Length: 170
Image (cartoon, rainbow, N blue to C red; front, top):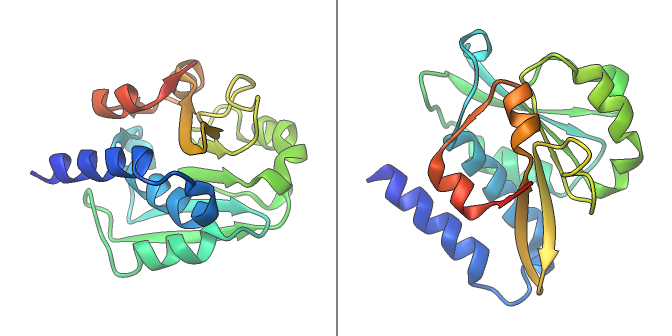
């Protein structure tokens, strides 16, 4: 039942509003939270905290904090949202969101995270093809997301079939 609700929410978010970018931060936060529910990280990444990192400032941060406050899931005791001001500050996190205003640091971030099981989520055209696991794109005034299967495979992150069907696979 929980998966059905998550799937319904994702579909509604993908196709309901004519201009989702007007509330981009809110919708991206909901997507990011639901990505967590549809992915599986290696056992060594399962601990008492699920850490979602954000590079720089972003309107996504307060929305993610609101969504994850007092929630637990998958045996984890809590979600932690961390803001990193520079790529050198990035420490262990299961997800890292790179807003478009930080996209110039993408190569530095991917070098730093090489060999880890961190899902890199971006929002700039072309970054999906360059190695981001998930890249938000705007298509016909709708928020969609690309999924780079090779990047996810290298990070040893398993993705549900339902999420794959919603994604633009690259």
